[in-house]
Picture 1 (cartoon, rainbow, N blue to C red):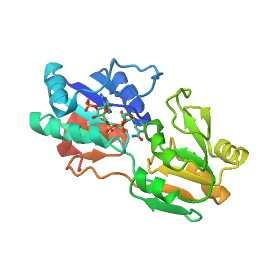
Picture 2: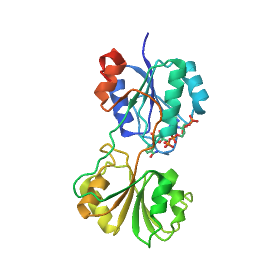
Picture 3: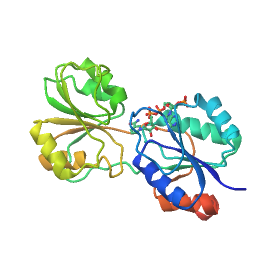
Picture 4: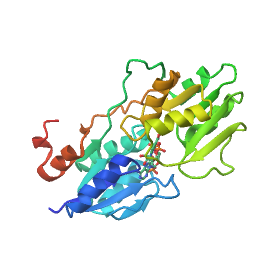
Length: 252
Ligand code: NAP
């Protein structure tokens, strides 16, 4: 049976995987939630928007004759990942997660670990600081509960009236970011504290390295638990191995 792959996307890993899959001449489609206005051009066809929960994803997989699913979403896109596990288990369609390892503390880091966005908001019940908020656009509103701070946002799309903060400045950039530039960014905005998800990977790492270099504390939000069993790899080469040669050869 010919492979017809669904890639759940929205990350740099999905973009890299798409290139390899396209080069290999495999039938595949990339799926995006539609959170970002300007999606980078991709070498594979794409679809945009939610499927409609587990039932909708099952319908999509069946209707599009998908043979394999690779979940290359962000580690905090937990609902999509759970839906993928449940749908693929129901339909007995092979599923693999292409995941990034979380960041771990290094010498010189000053991390305050919290388990959720709301715990980070609670922690910020302190006198006014200049805070870089690296939590993604969808969660910014929660920080309006701590309006005493001056927030710096780095956004992919320009801000509209949807930013529910009264005291913020924003820069528009989708990277790639470098430690040198992020040190300069944190210094020029006189940032005293960074709030970040533990996204892992290299794409968003430079701000963490920059904070260490400058001795700044980081409120690090731990990853949510998947609470599901699934096969997971970290390298694209392993994902290709799984796709072309089957899970039994992967040793996972
Ligand atoms: P989420 O909370 O897990 O997903 C909520 C709903 O959005 C899902 O149930 C699904 O809707 C839809 N959805 C999510 N990812 C999708 C995809 N790749 N294709 C089609 N529908 C998708 O996800 P999220 O945290 O809002 O993240 C949304 C997207 O942004 C993901 O693709 C993720 O990779 C990317 N992203 C997220 C973060 C982050 O920090 N969360 C950071 C960078 C990139 P239905 O139930 O209707 O199918």
